[in-house]
Image (cartoon, rainbow, N blue to C red; front, side, top):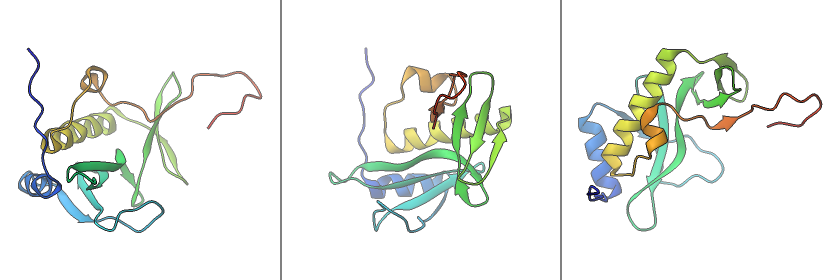
Length: 139
């Protein structure tokens, strides 16, 4: 039998995250930012959340390791995962991926969000680049 999903309000999620020793701070300014957006961080990993129109939590920036103050994305090239920001790209270590996975699980549990099967297995990449054909444009 499926477990009943509990939807929590944004304020409830913030108080839960505070009791679980997450650092909660106003999110930096940028395009498509909500005035009430906050940056939550723990284990060297951060995400940005904001209140959704229905009062629940909306994730603005997925969880990622923090490099030089910027939330990095996981890039999967098939043979290895990398952590990438606008200016920096480094190979992801097992510790990086473990921290991102642990952070994501705690954030989803606090927000009452669904956890998909593939997410429960480990850190999910933001970008997959497997194609090694010369001259092919990739992001």
